[in-house]
Image 1: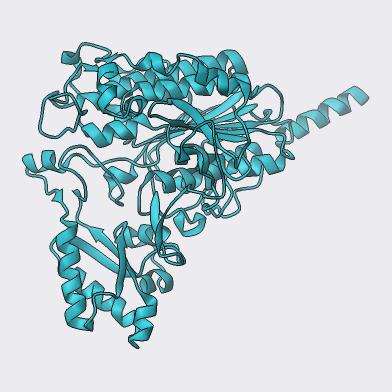
Image 2: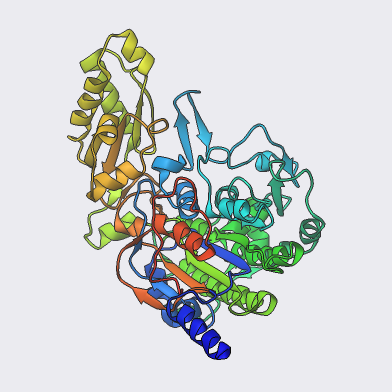
Length: 542
């Protein structure tokens, strides 16, 4: 009778959902591929193998309509938003660099003069996350585990390592080029590099990548991209044309020595090498307390900026990155164990096709002449207010006004803002203009207005916000860039994979703010303290 009762109670608890949940992952791996448009998953699909991107898609959950929901779509706010579960409006990282209204100077998102470089004789290590105002899910995991769960951030870019890892990270490491070619950090995390990092830097790992870069496969089979020789690519100093192959050892002499590796697929290989070394050196995922490894592949961004989104160089880079993803997954399977880790892959922003190329196809596109715009606006300010000094700074498509001067001249701030809006909207290349007052006092529930508001931080953003026409950029006539709220910049991949993830896919719209709450829900920990997103329940297996 007792046995029957026990069996009945057990069955009841299982039916009611009280059965023991799947154990938490030993390791959460976040992968951000810098400047990865969503269509790179589909354009190059036939060139990928079965154990990289395609394995993530077939065994994981693929969010096919994933977007950023704020402007500007740059690297720093992208990484911060993914890991904090909110937008610049709350986490405060409004750009890579921005004009600081209190100090009257431009500040860098991760720059910190109060810390020291560790592992480099340069100022490249004077960095920390102090300008990010909210926690990341990695911070919350550290707090939940009483600081037992480790967090490590890794990238070629300092901001790509620092911001995801958060404020409580054990370490964040990034690459310094020049003559050094080392992975470095900051005294924010430690006073000296661990032995395993010194061993990595002392090895020939980085130097060995100064090798010829040619296409992995026959270039004639790269039918998913444009011609190798065209008018829309930058290239390297010392080489007449931006065409394969590239002798990196020779070209490095006139392209920043080891810095040249950033703009090649081998920069991504360095990151994978270092990530594997970090898993070993820090014993990540070796016990039942969840660790977090934040990886950002940056070479994709450097190459996109240089060669453009339709280049052979980009295609080869993603074919090779597929191999890096495969290598990392194989290592995680062997070291941590299949089903013992959870991984997500996404991007911090997309990129626009080179406007010159678009124009050749009769698609509206072009380049901004910022100097002309500034001169015209200054003339308007002088004519209207008898002073050009009312404008303090123009950057990141924002106008910052001199509030002290406005007060001194006894002008109404709101009226000055509105006058500038009414002037700028007459300029041919500008699509929309909004005041800071509108961003503060009006609730927008959709459209470009809403994503502008999500990117607007009351204490850090400007007085007037400008939206330019689609595919109109402030950039060189070669290569691609990003920053807008248009689909080419907002639509990026998002794939969840591994422990606790239900295989599947969706075309329902998901947004960047949903990533951190989904991982937090998986781990049963608090959401990041300023998170505004929601868990993607269809993704979670339990």
